[in-house]
Image (cartoon, rainbow, N blue to C red):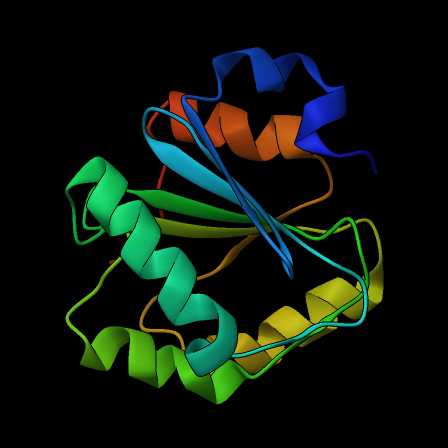
Length: 140
């Protein structure tokens, strides 16, 4: 898989947020994250920062926003930290995971134990973005 930067989708990015642990691309109705290899993604060090920055930029708590985790790199997620996300009154219209391999999908099963809704899985970023564009969202 390649970064959003290397696809036609990059032309539609309205804001790019660059962090030491990865990049976040803000589009009109969705956000795509690409976390760096080897990161142990958690709320306190990563999720809170991204959430606050996106909420500030878009002036939203996420209720009408789809979050796409574009897993182009291998990294881990502290799945139980989704509870901290929801505790802070944030929410999502949809949560999609894009991964080419089964490990990414197996990890999403663990995340689903703590996520307040359904997680939709895709093998390509284009397929995930198409679902956002046609308005099919399964969370809530």
